[in-house]
Image (cartoon, rainbow, N blue to C red; front, side, top):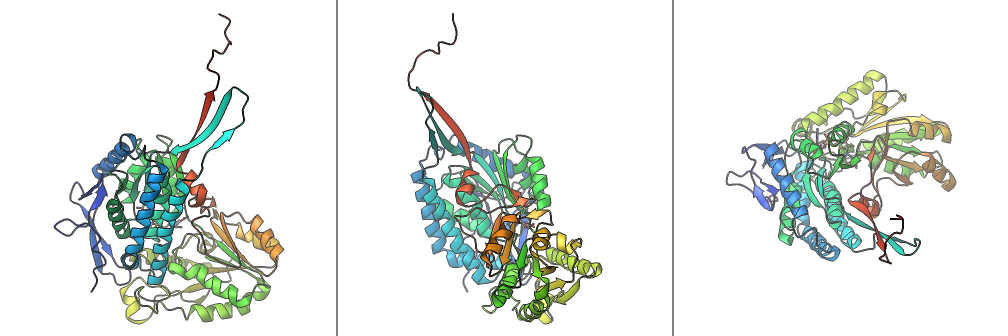
Length: 502
Ligand code: NAD
């Protein structure tokens, strides 16, 4: 049998090591954390658990690498070559990386394979972008010349969640490294494995020591340290809105640059004139991919009232046929939830929905038999007959729970769509092009789709309005978040000002 975890660097006792200052290291107090497979509850690895002292060491290493190492003076061309080599390494190790994410996160293998391809292409995209023009030049009154350059921000703390373990690491590191920054990545406590393998590939292709550090440990400990440290210049975070708020507060001490990719409760708006089967299909895909553990999930289905009953009938018929199971089973279409604790949180939301008076159309429970007893599985769930004030309508559940709302016209659809604290994503299904654009224009969300849901590209900015975040990842926007802007004014006639009389 293939050992998919062969790529981890381990101590003699088997503990997977962290990567700090170009060295593979245990925790300063030898502490560790057990990592589980959510599909089975089996232990898959034991990983070093960073202490504050380890965090400080990583920060000092990154600081030294930025302030004194060769990286700062590397050319964009050199950085691009490294990123391209890394992308090729990811391709070489694609099967391993996909298997590790499925083993650690539970998502179906074909979803993980998708993530790995995306990860390699993200490095390629930023390798290309690194060498493209980034500055500006102005025609200013003679004898001056003014131009603008972009420079790296410096030491970047990067904190990521568990739902896309590899891809979130890459979305953070690729633009940061392309722009010449150094990184300290803190993966989620529950899914650190693919990030550690990525670090070993980075070491192999030759990133200088300290330029990339992977610190495995607790959010409130080393994550907080990264947010708080005065030696860190920027903090980039993806995760829950509550955590994002605490990171923002911790970051105020040295007013570090901050970008936040937070939660969502995104509306998927279906008008009666939409292509029926396409809209049904995407309504399922919008919520059940990655078992609903997607920040941009279409977790609120807004359906034109006249279509509701017919749509629900078909939706439920198809939702109940979704194959729930272990991500390694090729028949599986939806995997488990990440942890027992998270599954229980989602179950509490289901109980809340029932208590609030919403009507459960399907799911709402664990599968029957062995599957329901072993892993963290929940069946695809749909609630209708909701009111806008219900908690299941307003709050991010982050599981396979679709909440249906109805509307009678365009204005009501827009009002309901905008009626949460979030503004990450939104979609519209209709065959009326003008109506689609009118709705998209009025929806306050950073990522929108017309007659589709979920596709996103390395070239396009990712991020939210309102309490879904600050800043953007990916594309040129994501690159710019990792740069400082410097204006340079040159006097073309080197002579005195003549301003003072004596
Ligand atoms: P989380 O906020 O609990 O944890 C995210 C990361 O923050 C983890 O690495 C965790 O260790 C760390 N952390 C926790 N407390 C911290 C603290 N006090 N200081 C510093 N770091 C801390 O989120 P999660 O449960 O891992 O992920 C789910 C959430 O992530 C959802 O709300 C989801 O919407 C959001 N998410 C957003 C996007 C996006 O692009 N907008 C993408 C994926 C996930």
